[in-house]
Image 1 (cartoon, chains in turn blue, yellow):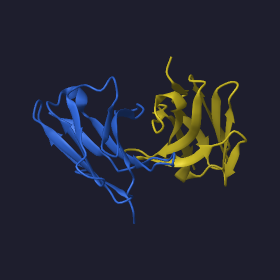
Image 2: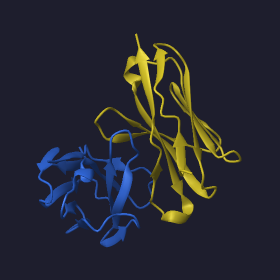
Image 3: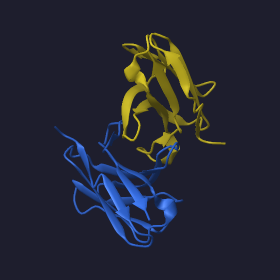
Image 4: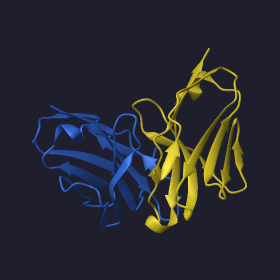
Length: 112
Length: 112
């Protein structure tokens, strides 16, 4: 089945230790998104790629970076995780003419 | 003022009850509207799009009132499996063709 896959599902890192979360998709969608969701809060868009074009949200901290080496894969790099970065990180995709975004299962990040 | 506002609930209803959620949005230029469902510790999934004329999908009815800038979701004959958080989602026309703005969600608990 076509889908959005995120690895790992659970990630534990230490304060200040860089971490990379990965997302892959078999939907061949050209738009990929990264969201941060904290408990009882709305998913917050960090950035998105339209093909290779990177679009950063104005309030996304510099600590968060992203890479998209090809259509299928997208990575979220957190350079120096702080305790406040503990959250669920959701990857989503959408096609050109579709409004619907398809979400992966998320990676739950814990920062010790 | 938040772009998308919802009553966080929880709404506690017995099986078989009818329950309605409302959501308001601040950007009058918003173009598309959706309800997503999110189960505990899972990813959001599209429940239904909301059209100007109102639309129904089985036990679920969604309506849009552009003049008052609110969206509603009605669930009839509630099932235990309807217990989840319902996210109101808006696509503002002037913030990028694919950007979605999520509400914090309304939690529904259906009891036997």
